[in-house]
Image 1 (cartoon, rainbow, N blue to C red):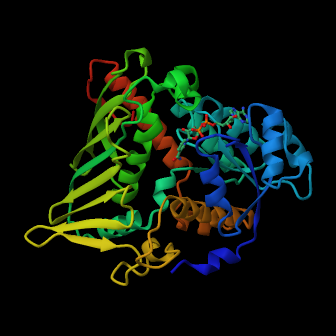
Image 2: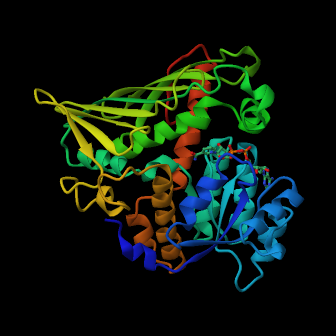
Image 3: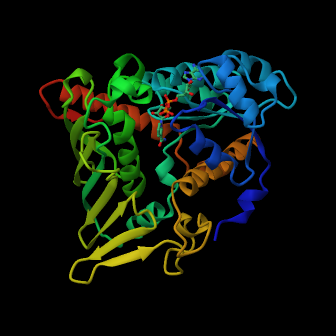
Length: 392
Ligand code: NAI
């Protein structure tokens, strides 16, 4: 079951930038962060519209004087208070992540930032350096990475049950934007605008999730990649609503990632399949409680969350919140990620970098790799789909 020792950690004073009324992902942050009493929402600049943000914050139980008009004022005033915020989550459109994260870190505040963490690799690496200089945690909200069966998959790879990894196929391909829905949907509209979304649409918006899961499960480094991207809804150009990325990994494995918003009829189809020389595993985010394990020459097995046969020393069990059999899902995954953020932020506050380094969480390097991958994908796709080295 869930490791209750985590719940004994000091409660962090937490704020949000963005995630206001009607936003897509603000609620998931609040559910994930506050579920274990590890984060208490005490301040916020919740909305681009200050009045709406204040009203919303007060509804959430935040004192009116701590519902700020903008993030600059919030970081400046909160960093002067004895009971000021320790950590902020940034759930605003992509173009704002770099400036807001930088401003928070310079004010001495730990950050959990949405993905993609920045527009460019240079900016992401600069943020990493600032966090390091100030002894702060910069986490990135790859929210699917808290699912227990993802960690079981990782454990099977680490314990060599699959043998040498040969193929990694990743996909996140939904159908919600098969038509030009952005005409009537502000949350979709900014995603198709390069000034707000960045150099990519589906690659950054959903491809980075599947890419991170593939990296988390296998730990394999990308050597080179080749990307093809296109906008089937023509008005979305130059941003893509569909992309395929072929990848070669350092150990000789190969892989493919399909990111799409035009997979008509599909809900999410976020699937990670890892093929080794002895066996394969497959995880699907729409059925997160199960992990398929297929050993060559034997019947396929469906491993179920919470069961005693999972690796008991591993995150697969210590993140289990409600026991086997009960359906568990999205908020539990987010809460598991937030619980990790609480562990490392408290450790950093105690100058205990050994614990930080020994604890898995989606850190700034995970954010950096997402941005590096996006830069290389764009470089490849926009140069006649040529192969490009993953690292310089
Ligand atoms: P949204 O457009 O639904 O909401 C954005 C919110 O930020 C709104 O409340 C808006 O008023 C506020 N905002 C915008 N600029 C602001 C500023 N300067 N100061 C304060 N508030 C500001 O956007 P959505 O879909 O919630 O996405 C936000 C971020 O979360 C994006 O970076 C997106 O990529 C990411 N995201 C991540 C998901 C995940 O699974 N980790 C899922 C969905 C989105």
